[in-house]
Amino acid sequence: MDSGDQSSGALGEAVVFLDHFRELVDGRQLAKVMYPLEEILLLALLGVLAGAETFVDIARFGEKKLDFLQRFRPFAAGTPSHDHLGDIFATLDAEQFQQCFVKWVASLTGTCAEVIAIDGKTSRRSHDKAGGKAAIHMVSAFAARQRLVLGQVKIDEKSNEITAIPRLLAMMDIEGAVVTIDAMGCQRVIAQTILDKKAEYVLALKGNQAALHEDVALFVAEQKERNFHECKISQNTTVDGDHGRIETRATTVIHNLDWLPKDHGWPGLKAVVIVDSIRETGDKATHETRLYLTSVQLPAEQLGAIVRHHWAIENSLHWVMDMVFRDDECRVRTEHAPANFTTIKHMAHNLLRSAPGKDSMRLRRKVAAWDDDFLAAIISR
Image (cartoon, rainbow, N blue to C red; front, top):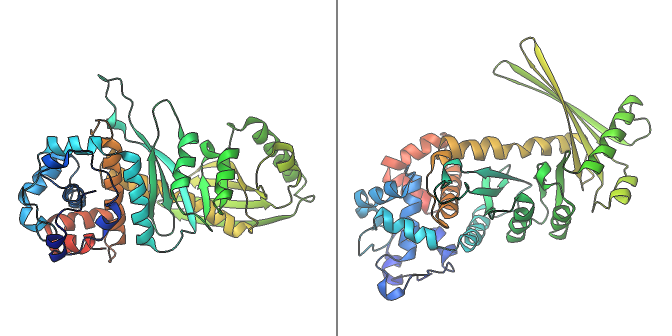
């Protein structure tokens, strides 16, 4: 990426994130570039932090906030139109953009996440019926405790999460972490990739691994009938209640499973986790049993907590993306633009999440829209 006028940039207020995006290739003819790429990225991120949901919103933000933008960079030619912004984001290499994002967020967190939840999300309005283009689906890695997006990759058309997850894992330093994935990611190659990266896994086991699921479910049912007398186990029970609902989770971990990895060739398998949950709402009660494969020998109390941490990606990321950033309403559709715009929103999510204070994400974004000093403080992180 052309860093532009370093001397003028040095005189402005600090913009830490730009240092990690200097390797991003700008495919435009440099002689014709009116708006340096670093200014485009800064404009887009500031606009999204302040509430922008489309390129039209970002362009309008640029027009109204030019004096503010010039606190950070020259913006000698002003700011581009929404069409120009869309064209630039459509041609930026999405995978390279995501790799830069991973490097930036690694510097932001400073330490390896303890539990990394991986899950996919579809931007529902990004489809193009006329062009026969499906809505984009992004797979994200989320640090459950820090509640930060660590990385994301776009699933290629005619592909699925099984091929995208190893690409995402390859981009990140996950050494020492426990990676949690739902049933789609319960694959031998993904388990081995996690182990090769010196991390551990907890993978949900369902019917997509038919023979393995059948064997484990049958074994668990038999052992429950015998009160697990033939197994080395640990157990833990938790009770949570909110909004008139009570949920009781009984976690049982079977630690001696030498026969299972041998019979099914499953790499690194050390234990099976059984979570029996009962949800009570009024007079109604529902029961569910979920099974997990894991490469770690931890007691039920800790593994039960890790399983619960996985759902942080639904509650603290996917929900926030839809309700705060209106992701499901986003109609950005051209070439790489949807994936790149999602990356910008993930950057805004991380910066807002890292801002000091106890305000909600929605309120922080509202404050960023009118308080220039608050917005400047966020972007300097």
